[in-house]
Image (cartoon, rainbow, N blue to C red; front, side):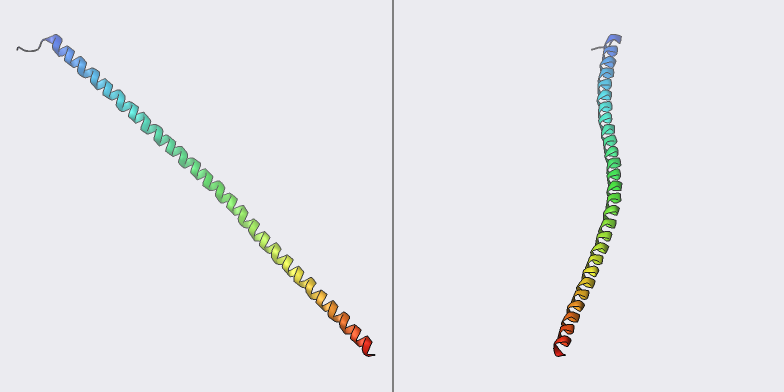
Length: 104
């Protein structure tokens, strides 16, 4: 067996070049998929941040609604107590007036 000829060396180099190009294409496609995933995850992070900000604003509105509802409930209870106290006073005055009329 002698030394390889120029054509054999060219054929081997061409074969090697073809295999390297195939590997390079596969590596590029894998990198493209990785970059697509990174972009997708980045977009999900932006969407999550936006959703969190919207939820924070909504929670702030709910907080004020709860506080005003509590104040309104306290006001209604105070008004009911005041009306009840006046009713009791009116009934007691009415009964005390009747007893004084009856005693005379």
